[in-house]
Image 1 (cartoon, chains in turn yellow, red):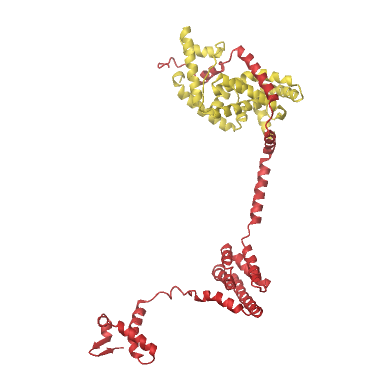
Image 2 (cartoon, chains in turn red, blue):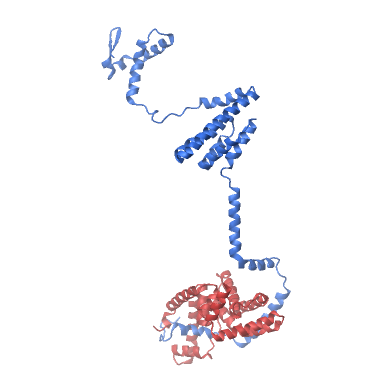
Length: 211
Length: 273
C-alpha cells in the first residue's frame, strides 16, 4: 500500500518537487538526529505558503497566524514519527489543513473577517486590477478593496472542503494528487469538488467575470 | 456594493490569483517568529496529558485495522456459536427430571429423543421445556414432538419417530413399574397428577365437531318422542320423559313439520313413524 502511494507520488510529482522533497527530507533527518536548529530552515521555507493556505481558509489574519504557528509546533513535536513516505511539505500541509478544519468546525458560528492588503507589487494581481478599473488611482484602490471583499464573501459561501480544494489548487498551485494526499481523499473527489466550487464561485462573481 | 459592475474582462482564475497577492507585511513575520518561539518553549514546559501515550498506541494499532477487525469478528462469532445451544435443553432436561423422581434413565431413549428434537428444532425443544414439571407431563414432552415432524419430515424420519415413541413408551412403563415398586404411595401421587390430564378436554376431529342440521332435527324429534316408547322401563327414564313432555307444549306440537307426524287429539297423542 505504501509502495503504491510512493510510486503514485513519484509518477505525479515534478522533478522540482522531487528535488525539493529530497532536500526537505535531509533537513528532517538532521532534526531527527538532534540538530533542532535545522527546523528553522523548514519554518522559513514554508511559513508563507502555510500561512497563505490557512488565511484563505479562515479569512482571518490573527487566526491564520495562530494556526500556522500551531502547525509548526505540532510538526516539530511529531517529527520523529515522520518516515518520509510522503514529502515533508505534504505532511506539514496536512497538519495545517486538519488543524484549520478543526478550528473552523469548532467556531462555525463565530466568524470574524480581517483581511490582508492586496500587494500590488505582484505583477499578475496588478494587471488584473488594472484591467478591471479605470485608469484613475482613487477608483482603482476602492475597486480593489471592493473586489477583495466580494472574493472573500464568495469563498466563505463555499463549504469547508470545497474551500480547501479551491485554495490549494487555485491559490497555492498544488496538483490534484498532492491535494488528494493532503485531504486524504481520491483524486476524483478532488476534481469533483474543484468543479463544483468553481461553479459556485462563478455564479457568485458573475458581474466580474468575462464570459 | 457596486450595482453597475465595470467591464467584465477577467476570468475566475485571474480573480482567484488576486488572493495570492494578499500577503502580510514584513513586520508580521517578526511577530510570527516571536510567537512561534514562545509556543515552542511553552510546549516543552507544558506537561503532557496522561492519555497521550494511548493516542500513540492507537495510532500504531490503526495500521493494522484489517487484521485486528477480522480477529475481533472471528472471536465474537466463535463466542456466539459457543454460547448458543439450541438442542441442549432436551438432553439436559430428561435426566434431571428422572433423577428428581428417583427413576433409572436409559441412555438410548434420551439419545433418540434428542435426535428427534434436534430434527424438529428449537420450537420442539421449548415444548419439552414447558413439559418439565411433572412425570405425566414428561410423557407429553416425549410424545408431543413426534406428531408434527412425522408429517413434515417424510418416511425415514417417521420411522425414527415411531421408534422413539415406542422406546419412550417402553421406558416410561419400565420407570413406572420401578417407581411403584420403590414407593407404594407413588400411585396416589401419579393419580393426582394424572387427574388433571384426564379431566382435560379431549381433542376431536374438527369435521366431527360440525353438526349437521338434519341430525339435530332428527334428534330433536326423537327426543320428543322416545319418552312414549320407553315409558315404564325405569324410573330415570320416566323422569326424563316427564321433562320432555313438559317441553312438548301444544304450541310446539302444532308447529311446522312436527304437525305432520304428531297428531294431538283429545286425551291422546298419535305419532307417525
